[in-house]
Length: 133
Figure 1 (spheres, rainbow, N blue to C red):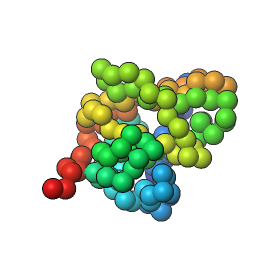
Figure 2: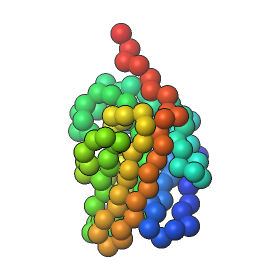
Figure 3: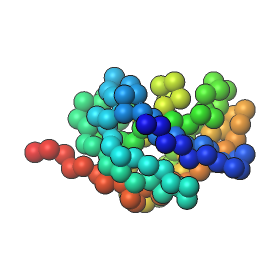
Figure 4: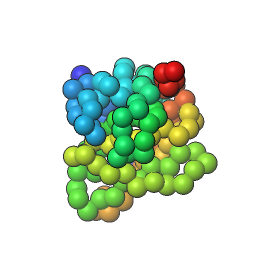
């Protein structure tokens, strides 16, 4: 099921959660996350599974898969910045983005180029699955 968080402001990134069957980095979204919801007030809840076999996106760890429809245009660049961290350019797979969770506080997603937009997501409600021993 695709859950949308529509944005009424033109300068705000629209964030969607892809279906469980969506393939990102050779994995289905359901193998990366479960029950992820982005609420109208930009709070993210659900579970991020610990993934050990992702190499292209930054190695093993916890990830979120999000769709950013505004980033479809090739002229746009997408970056994410965790609270207290540096901005990292994201590489799209179509317009799905795999974001490695480096913090449990917030992440700012920015789309720049033809369309400039930003959104701050509160990810404190995301449960991080521990690495299996």
